[in-house]
Length: 239
Image 1: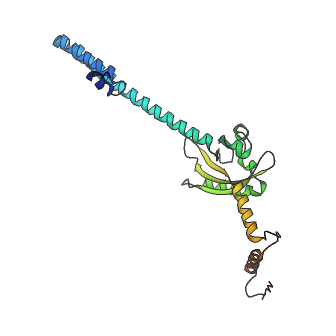
Image 2: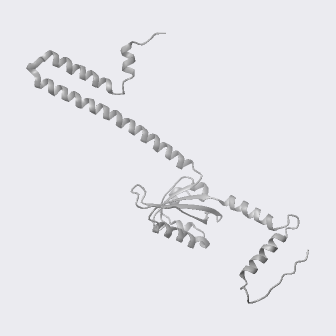
């Protein structure tokens, strides 16, 4: 195998962009050695220019590295947002949607162009709009940027409902955002499963009728609602 020369190995270890500066510096030394004291002013100016060029080259190399790091970071963030199953919204104080991630198409059945400019409240089921309004008011009054979490149902264009868990953060004072960041997660499947488990716990699997557990649960609620000391009540349970 052919080995590289010592000079080549040394040059390969130098930072990118430093070789031209070194060449200019060597040229400055040769220039000073040849001209001597007769052209001292020219030599000093030449060395000064060389030093400035060296600083510029190093700074350009540093800026290039910073740009590459920033580009990789932006690409990573863009990939995370575009491939996330959650919907990321930037909402103004009046609930106007200013930005939405591409996943809104899968969760809400609407594209980003259909959502941007509309009000988030208008997409919430009428039964849950008061909850969504309290959510936005709480975010507006939050000065420390603490996140708030609320659940509500969203309306899809086909009339179906999506149960969502919404986490909001007040970033109105953040110059790059200037709005509420709302992370919306589809929990319809989770709520459906919980409902099925609850139904199975309180109903007989064979007859589909209420079982003893549901009966006792209803009695506990009824007794808790009755004012104490006013009326005596008794329950006779026959099995």
